[in-house]
Length: 401
Ligand SMILES: NC(=O)c1ccc[n+]([C@@H]2O[C@H](COP(=O)([O-])OP(=O)(O)OC[C@H]3O[C@@H](n4cnc5c(N)ncnc54)[C@H](O)[C@@H]3O)[C@@H](O)[C@H]2O)c1
Image (tube, rainbow, N blue to C red; front, top):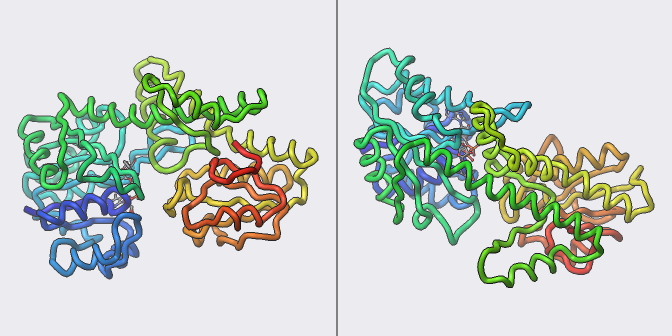
């Protein structure tokens, strides 16, 4: 059996590695430089090493391509392309649409088409299937299914093998074949009654995180006004053995899931005339955290940051990975510049970002820690500026959240 995976990013390449143990895998991506690198055994994501990739290529189990016709003899096609937001925070499905165009053009036999990209309920049934059918020059009875991806980049305890995987097919046959595919590398498969349930469950998982992170970010502001430690308060609440789940305050939420997916749910709710109040409010609270942090730093530094040199430490959206998508560091830097600060950034895992490069620690008036990777020394960070504001809770005895 041959599998094509459209999109070779965090999700697609990770699934490719696991699927390649049992299937011949084609990794299709529109980024030609990425395809070239992958075929040279150069991985761009955490969790897949260059030697993993080299081994798969050497065994003939994996090859990357940007030629759409290479999917034509595949039995299964997986869609793993980005699903970002437009400027107005509504779903931007152009990558899914473009993946559907590729499938429609080159799927010259019946295939099982599985969507792993996160999108709103109804995407498989009302967008992917009709689009492929309307664009296909040849008419084939493809099978359609969804299995939302839950990968957490950089995480090792929960992975493709042991994280339960939801799935659903538009037909019984689609569901059975989807189960059969994922059961080659996933221990726990959970079938739900419709693609819409699987799609909604994925969006709700990340909405749950976004709302709870916003709640602790609000508590951080209340605790500071009360003159108590938010982290001690959360640790105290966490001694309750039931009915509480601890989340931690931060500069905001980043990555491709938590800041984005809840807006897909809010969008579909709006279309149905149902309020998504918590989601919308949580989104605002998290997006406003950088502004709150800037105000705290201003208050601690004589009421003005004009001309002050400020180093933002850690621009990846979370520890130990190089991913800067939707990072709260970007909003923070913009807010600091607005109040006249001279801003640079440091991140040992991110060499180039937003047209500038990581600069060494030291010689700043102020340092603000957004993300602390394990490779960063707490002592070196503390020595880097006379005033440190820590949003991570990982630098002891400094100002922060
Ligand atoms: N990254 C995560 O942690 C994560 C976790 C769960 C779900 N998801 C979801 O999975 C989907 C993919 O996310 P990702 O993080 O892998 O994205 P990514 O940006 O890392 O990778 C996507 C890849 O798709 C390629 N691509 C875009 N359009 C294409 C097209 N039409 N044809 C071929 N290739 C195309 C891009 O070049 C890119 O290499 C998104 O819907 C995301 O929300 C991501």
